[in-house]
Length: 493
Image (cartoon, rainbow, N blue to C red; front, top):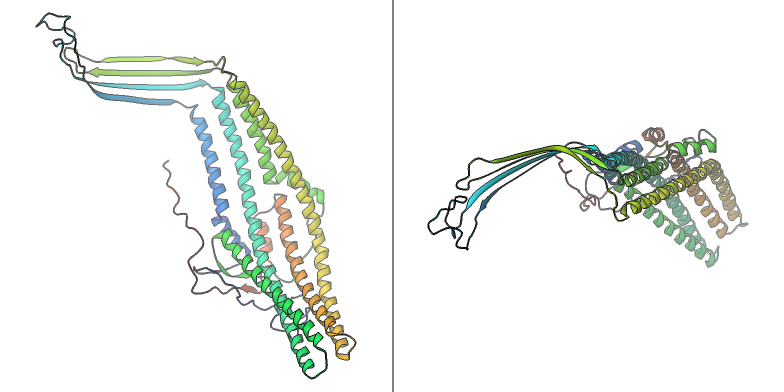
């Protein structure tokens, strides 16, 4: 199997025999906490535990589940207690109504005097809904919302898996490309040194030196860009996992590049329609909207509840003994006969929302079918592309050897040699691109079909037993860029 050329074996460089070496650290970062060494499975588990978007989706799911209990509470018994204690004072300014010195038998005081007293009251009320179609349908709608949110959570989990895999293989991709660009810069640099030496002894013209210099400058710019791409790719993992990694495992050169199984595009499309969590979420959204229509229609129906109440009152007014008590037990019915047209408007509104959700479901289904078809075709083409890119390296190496031989005997010029060098390392870079495109596209196909899970990651992880891609982090780095959100809030049960 083809191995990419080592940057440390330039003089004996051959793409079929050179062995991959460890990549030294060429990154500048602002990381401070100890970095880890990990493979794809370890990083995936870190992401499933620490990813911010996934944690948010889990909390949202728990919130939607709590909403069902909120809606259900209106159908369960309701009990309320209220009471008050007050100091009362009455101010009288009128005279008369009794003769001077005559005592008011009702108040126990003489006219014109105030009469303060204290009072206390207690009220207990209980009710139980016997028939409430609106609340019952709101509970049903809450159940449908839970179903939808579960699919949304599954979609978020799969997106985290594909994001981690993409970021992981982007690092390996950038590493292999940087390997090729460093080797290219070194090879063209030697060609430039040779051209300068030949110019100094009068064997070639200055134009050939300038051509070599231009090619060297171009290769240097490409190497710098490759270093930047590697740093950016490596930093993406921290956003996904909240962890820092000093090294990751490379993909074995003998990783099998083969057609997706089963090799039937329609089969993958059927899997996606049945299992894609986004499609299922939109389908559940239709049922949520349908329940919303039921809730709106239930506003026209009567409600019936049983109720009971108890009241106690007492005061310390002079001349009054004992206290007052009363109780009540009965049924209460309510039938909205006319609500100003708001009920009909609510029904129309929810009906349009149902129609919109049906269109959203169809749009998502069509988009998923198109994505699966495109990815299946892309993966199938990637198999041929990888094979073609591998053969292109062999062909370009042979072309470079022939061009160098022609240059030595005077039948080819330095521009031909430089172009052949450039073509070889472009072919090496393209081969690395094709290999990792295949892996990521295959995982994306499984994601769209609803079959991307940790087991799929484990299958890929078994082939990550090659050399490590190592990154050295600075010792004097600044503090972490990961925000500490603090402890989770305590919830009273």
